Amino acid sequence: MFARNGIIGINEHQRSKILYLRNCWYIAATLDEIGNAPIGRTFLDEPVVLFRDGDGKIAALEDRCCHRQLPLSMGRVVGGRLQCGYHGLEFDRSGACVKVPGQNRVPPGAAVRRYPLQERHDWLWIWMGDAAAADPALIPDVYWRDDPGWEAWGAHWNVGCAYDLLIEIQLDNTHAPFVHPDTLGSGAITDTPPNVERTGNSVSAARWMMDVAPSPTFSRALGTEGNVDRWLLWEFSPPSLCAFDIGCAYAGTGADKGDRSQGITLHTAHFMTPESRTRCHYFWSVGRNYKIDDDALTDVMTEEFSRIFQEDVEVVEAQQKSMDAAPGWKAIDVNTDGPVLQARQLMQRLIAGEANL
Image (tube, rainbow, N blue to C red):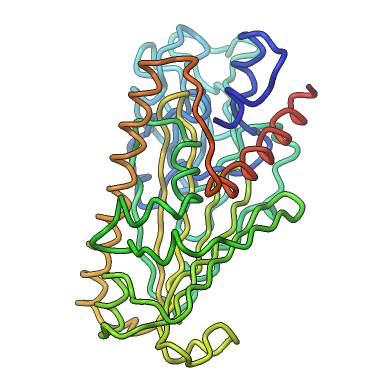
């Protein structure tokens, strides 16, 4: 686990403050999730309410009234303001209380925290740290979500595990033959060591599997059972983006030299936003740049990848339950854990640096 087991020599009170990176962008919601009613969510152990004001702009505030601490998400939007469901105090999108029923004067300091937001790639991004440091340029570029030459789809799931468990199962490709035997699994993955690189604040890896049998998913998509050249390229960028470039082409047609015209390419993106120590929000997306107008293919692939990612979720939720039942249990590492260990070390360094440890 990133912070839980990685930073030595601190007490539990300190540890509870440094489980997460805060000065970074996380996904809070898909844009179509935010309607007319306020939505309460928890990010990094902090309650947040999301709502649209009178102009349709989305705001994120602390989900706790400054009067008697009722969650503001239990209220409603009135005249573009968020009204508390207990005594009717109203808050504007900045978090300032602008009305207290029964009195003309708003008490000094009557306000709740506001969180910076950005809308990009049909996702709502939230900054949980120092608002003055919230730079939109730091939002990851998932260009294919907006590119008309790509067909993209995805989902948001609430998952019963720590966010780093979902990150680690993405970076550990060697689970595929055992967790996904009917879809992405292939012995070629475990037989081909990745080339792992760490550059600045990212970790990347590449697996090129040449002249191998296709996995079931790619056999169906490419329409062949003959051998292929398959690639599995990924990059991890803090706090939680796992971005993949995967695909295959007929063997010997030059995919490894840059010519993918005789194959298929898929991009996937996985963002995990921590909710608490044992739950997270999982936003995933898949894109393809071939047969983008084939709705039937989109339906088939949506179902297939939903199944694949649900299989991952079943593993990490069971893993979380097992870990909760045996706190302090020490796991071993094996050779294929290299990419995961690199990502752990990177996150431990960044979290400790942000906490000035």
